[in-house]
Image (cartoon, rainbow, N blue to C red; front, side, top):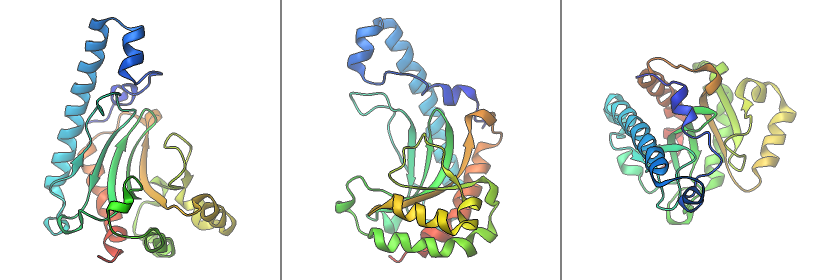
Length: 218
């Protein structure tokens, strides 16, 4: 499976709400937009299922959460999937995969949305920052980026190599995080498309990030 320009361009639009779409497009044009979304989302879903099937059985991640292409009132500005072990479904921390108009990313995150309904605190999650210097020795660091959870997904995130080499940059990230968390992931940009063998690349990144995820106590 290949990641190409069409996958990114799907989200390159100004309007996402169906109410606004109906004000500017004909019924036929809206149906065409919806058809494009459904087609691309099916590709996205297939990717997640193929990846999940190929992950180590001991991860217990054979059933990823694949977010729908619409929330009922809006088209999504990105596609998103979460990977949690079967015995950790009610935890805030998860591995995730996201595609927006700028980048494809495989990353570790603390899911802030409805976090009060799940277990696992921000403080414990953020302790993983101390593990990054040693963990980074095992990965292709040039592909990795780190950013505060509050930073918009379309911002230019900080390269992990830059973060690790700059103590002041590390302090700056901490300040930007506030009382929230950080995210770290392997990114592929729209400007680099196409990305061949997307399944293998996604599996590789999830396996590289897995030690951080499993380092969190149940």
